[in-house]
Amino acid sequence: MLRELIAEYGLPVVFLNVLLESLGLPVPAMPTLLLTGVITSLVGVHENVWSMRLSLFNVILVATSSALVGDLLWFWLGRRYGNRILGFLCSMSISRDSCVSKSGELFGKFGVRVLVVTKFIPGLSTLAVPMAGAMGATLIGFLFYDAVGAALWATVGVALGSLFANTVEPILDVLDWLGFGTAIIGSISLAIYVGIRWRHRATLHRRLSMPRVDAVQLDALLTEEPPPWVIDARRRRRRQSDPVRIPGAIVLDHNASVTQFEALDRSRKFVVYCDCPSEVSAALVAEQMKTEGFSHVFPLAGGLEAWRAAGFALEPLILDETTREAVNKIHPRSVS
Image (cartoon, rainbow, N blue to C red; front, side):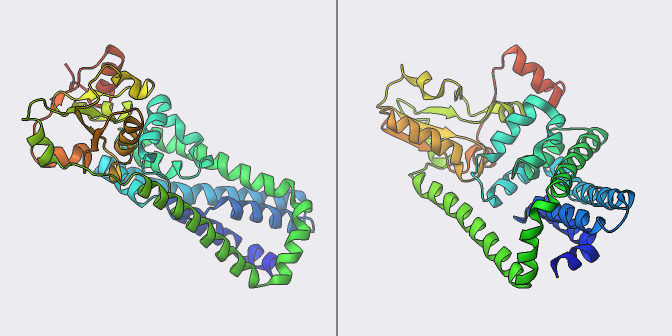
């Protein structure tokens, strides 16, 4: 039954599955590519070699085209809405909310070329594509590297399925015997996978549940004596794309971590901000600082965007020459 379904409806199934995954739904397409490669090869045993190769090529072509359709939408959204769409994606993600920062670091290091490998890394592709749009990648450059990455990813999936077709055939016999039970088992497995990931996320949020200060409270605290130390916990690439800070904020060196604050008075108040959903990056830094003996550390609720939206002052970041050049590539003439 399963073989007949894939043989007859394989291409539409591949197109739909890849499209849904590229749009961000938790429906991994690689198993479908593997299974399609297996069944196409087994069916092709009764045909000539060139016909089988053409069928496999069609699967790769359909998967690549479908990925490009979904990715083009996210690229446009990233170009149109920038950091807002990245924040939305991370807030909907079942991975850690610091995923935007990690994606930004990779994009900052490799540029749009990172799209060649992102589809092999679960969760990263959905973020890297709008990141390319938000960071000002050209449409031609995006289409080229995204197409290469999608084609390479689809080829690997189909080729592995074809290569191990004979080994997998006994498993297919069992799945054929199960009939619709296969779909039930697949649905249960997917539900378990999503449930585990959501549980990990919920555990992280409970662990980082701590008192926060909002933008109005921070503004009031800054008028006190002594004022709190304010820490900018954004990743370097995020600071490059938005080269401002809350006045007087200390920029956290993520390589040195909280050791750079060893000389500061641990009894003072500290407010840590980031630009990620649920202030996860700021809360992680605050948690680490508390373990190092800093007794009054609070994440800023809503992060830098909440401070900006409240209309409070911002000041340009003091940038080193390397960072200045990187910022100028993103925001020409925006840094003097």
